Image (cartoon, helix red, strand yellow):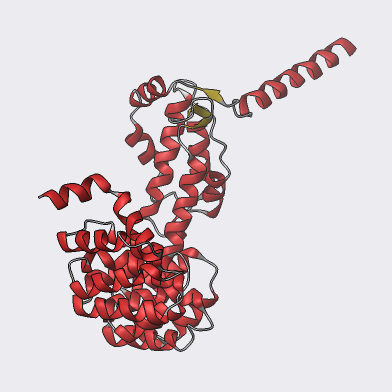
Length: 351
């Protein structure tokens, strides 16, 4: 009898051990990329995704999690094929509202540890997930956030446009700020002007509003707003805003704003303005003379030389050659401009 009890106990220990081993995720495995993708193509991915993501059951965490785990443990499919299904299922969630998907399902996807690894395309010694399911889940969360913040921004534009400025300025959430900027591009002009005026009053103390005013200035083509950006704007987004404004403003307006930037803006912003606007003004004699005059400037001289070296016409080349013949700061910078693309400049001169 005692032996029977021992046998029964050992039997159940074995059963539980095998169950534990079966439920434990397989270890990360390295695959050759082309062979892994070949095994993915052997499976009907779309059908499997549809079966997991039946809209009637997505909000039921137990059903969906069960289906996901069934895919994860299928022994008749390769690991890359299984993860391809989960990855495509995750991407498909972007089409749905957040409340259509159970929170437990998203948590499972966000915590998923990819196990099918392949060599990095540029660094073969490094392994990367063939299907980065966690990153895809994070992307879905970003999509949902942007959508929710955009809906909030639309409501506020209808009720309290000025409040968008405060929200944008205080927010540390990239999705929220991006949603506000995107919403402004489709807003009524009167609402955009209201937001712009509110933001301009704060810009000298809140340079984080630079992208917000940049978007409104592109919409309104308000030169005063552009001047304020040049004087008080800061951050990486300022350069792209100035480039877009070049396409929005009249050439004469851009030329006047470049003079303003050189005379009144901080050197770093004036440099950005030269870089953004010179290509469109390079054939304007007044702007060319302005750049040549800047060659002696201790802060902007190098930027002027770089600008003058870009696609110069015959008159610009002549001015640079004449200036370079003089032993001075301007002469040295003119020679620098000529040396940057000497072959092209000589070719232009000979034509």
